[in-house]
Amino acid sequence: MRIFYAADDSGNTAIKNSKTWYYNLYLPLVDLGNEVIRFNYNSTLYIQNSDSSIPRKKALIDKNRPKLEKELLAQIRKVNLKKPIDIFFSCFDNSCCKPEVIKEISGMGITTMNWYCNASYQFHLVKEIAPAYDYCLVPEKFRINDYRKIGANPIYFQEAANPSIYKPYNLPIEFDVTFIGAAYGERPEYIQYLFNQGINIKVWGPGWKNFSVNPILKTKRIAKKLMTAEGWQKVKERLTGMLSEKRLSQEKDKKIILPDKILGSPLIDFEMIQMYSRSKINLGFSSCGETHKMDKRILQIRLRDFEVPMSGRFYMVEYMPELEEFFKIGKEIVCYHNKEDLVNKIKYYLKNDVEREKIRQAGYKRSISDHTWQKRFRELFNYLKLAKNRI
Image (cartoon, rainbow, N blue to C red):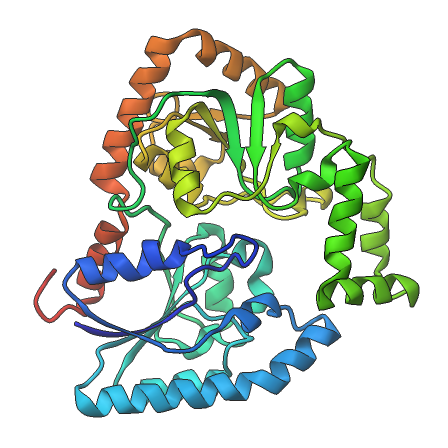
């Protein structure tokens, strides 16, 4: 098939040169023998300013969205004129273009589909544009009805991993327990609890240095922020009293302090994948954003839930029922229910190498067999009967 592909390489601008979606979406589509034409446009600005409820970000989007829309339609018309496009595949939210643009693409006889994986707690960022697509690929099962209520056509399409990228490395095991990811939500509290319980834990990712006890590092971080336009904007918001009451209440929360020795900076993509192989236990979190402060915590399956087992490593993540559709809990991955349960299971599996190794191998075999992006896309296209010659 001929696919016009519109997605940024990564949705995480905090990780330098990250190519998460390039590895997990673009390359698997190519692997299946499709002709994939990439949208030649830098959409980083739109990713960074997608929440239009913030006036400053809304102004940026209102100013720049027409530029993306114009360029998108121009490139699609040119490519489609040369040879018809079968699918327009995007990773868009409301900030990228208006629904009318997607409908215009559909009017060219092109099947449109959108991949969005933040609807668990940011559904509002895609509500405007979602109904315009022929299909919305939705990894959050509990959001399916929400898509239908707004007139969209959702298809449950769970995340996966690309075995060409996420794979085992023959490296010395250096760490007992590691976590790779941003410091937000319940994560710092959990990491502090693990450390206080004597667990040899190490973390890498954006924001962890903010919990350092080292005053020199803290001063350097503040100075670095002030050197950016966004940093100065935050200072301005503080001085003019523009911070919301919610933000202020969050800042008054009990301060979590973590020792410098367990805090690492963000890892680039392949450093992260190799770190999986350097760890006995790779830790995952299921809760989203700051929802632990709300009436109901929101849990979500993540890329990490497939990346770690696909990389051939032992994985431990907070339990949620949906995980049972993809792994045998306790046999292919291990789940915990709270901080105390997590500590107990970490200690148990650190002492039981044979059992840990058995689970690690089973998780790897299951991932390779069932949870590749290539298989996800093959099943999707066959289900929708989009492939002219069944892939």
